[in-house]
Length: 327
Image (cartoon, rainbow, N blue to C red; front, side, top):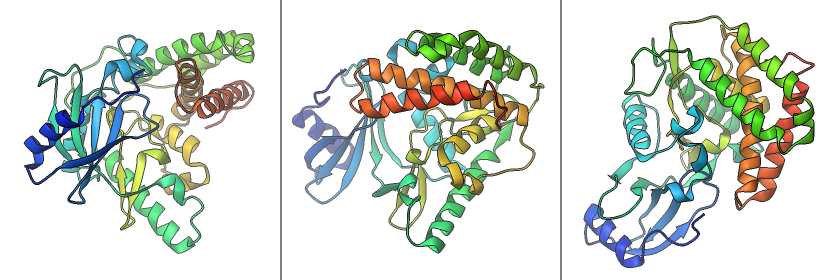
């Protein structure tokens, strides 16, 4: 993985001049930590302005091997998806950072890049322990309302915002295939997953067999954890890392929300969700996150402790689902 800067100072200066004008002089670019599929730099300017520089560089993507093989990854990476979903969400009143400029494979660089609004604030998870209970309650109500508004956007076919064509297979089949691949990978590296491989495969098939076809899908983020919601100084939430967003089963999102938000999932709860889908997608998430954590660990992701804990926790949760039906 690349660790050096993608732009020299002169290259960056030329770029920001072309976007913002000659009154904007980049003082410093700092690489931010945490991204698994794109690189993000924070750009400070001498006039006090700050923005982000997004880089979609396949050589810096920790899941580059999966991009052409698994639907989970090929549908959640790329500047085109980011640009499209930014416009789509903002047009529907969903807050997400503004896109100032996008360059897709131009100017002689081997990667796509963009200048994006910097939201000064903290991720939603930092408010889990917020001492002011009324303020915390109001914030998570606002987050829940924003997500409810997004989920209310619906259409018949699943897929990206610009793809409403009829699909050959239902969307849950895609996730089943990804989960099988994840199970295969995890079985090679975690003893208890290997020992229970056939049981987990059977459980996955059993849960999938209980799902009935439907003809309506909702717009979801696809990986909506509290780290993907930034709260600004006005206590307003913004969605980030939106490349994977699209129309899909609502239960896919809700099962993930329940995993990631814990007791704060109550702000997202919704009636009339399909319990069969919730259980199925929960197991899919556990297998995917087990495999994903392992791959980050094996591919030298900087936060190795996070990757190790991620894989171990979700491996245990997947095994637990063999004996308990959990929504």
